[in-house]
View 1 (tube, each protein chain N blue to C red):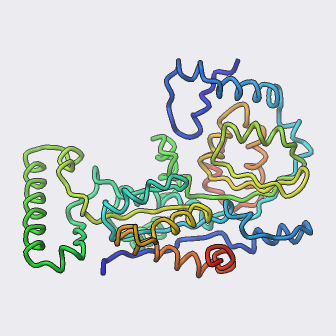
View 2: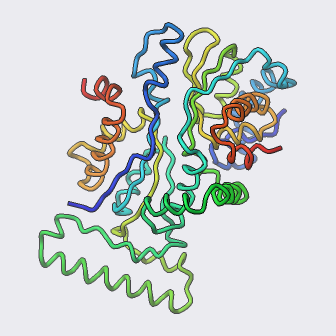
View 3: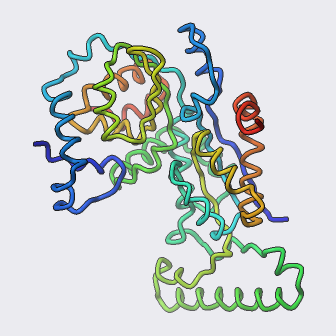
Length: 188
Length: 179
């Protein structure tokens, strides 16, 4: 039986006893075990992932959200300050957010992927534990996936969903849309 | 008239999704992709009363100016029209707010951390936040918060958000909300 808290991805902490007894947990664990157990990156070999769209200037978007919490300045000044201090400062802010476990700021970085050759059972197993990833079936094994960077980070850190998340990260790295973000967050 | 300022920081162009449908030879329906179109707003100058109402819409991401670390009392406060238009009420309101601010400064000068002194601050205080929301949730916010039952301030705020979203992605809003 997997020990993972199914509510972990939503940021809620459940009482361990309640989670242990929850039917949701049992269903979740069973599905995850059945679908993902033993699945590694090679089993997603036929999976095709394309980046359809992403938030522009992702590192800046996340930095703006972070500075918004701690600054009284209007957005234009925060924007100018980030431009002036440059990408190294934004990388510092991203690192701080990760260290402080303040992943909420990453939610403002959104991505849209086209996923091909992915079966419904796998989609359902990811859906059940990551409710903030929005799936839209185009046809058969083709899907549109809208995901925020926080969910992607959580999926990537979760050993069960890491093989799938790694496919998305590969595409982000190939496309060079957020090199500093990739370096800070996914630099293994 | 309040001092609310809303800026659309980015949005998902509908064409980026439509392109995939065309590539696959599928009919495109804007209502099917509402969970996939995002808007990020920066909001300034509304009261904490309104942001309390706003964050009840949970399928969205928010980051709001912290009162623990920022100079919260320097932000100014919102005066509701019903008070602004009543001279006696305005006097009561302003006197109370000034007294609260004095007490806040006094507590801080007595060594009380800002994070504790802020318990005394009013909901009228102006705030700033960023918010990212998808079209489906924004539509729900618009339906609820622009109705005449909604309070004047959030109505004004959401109307601004709606105008910006509609300008950015007109095909989505024209086909759905104005049916």
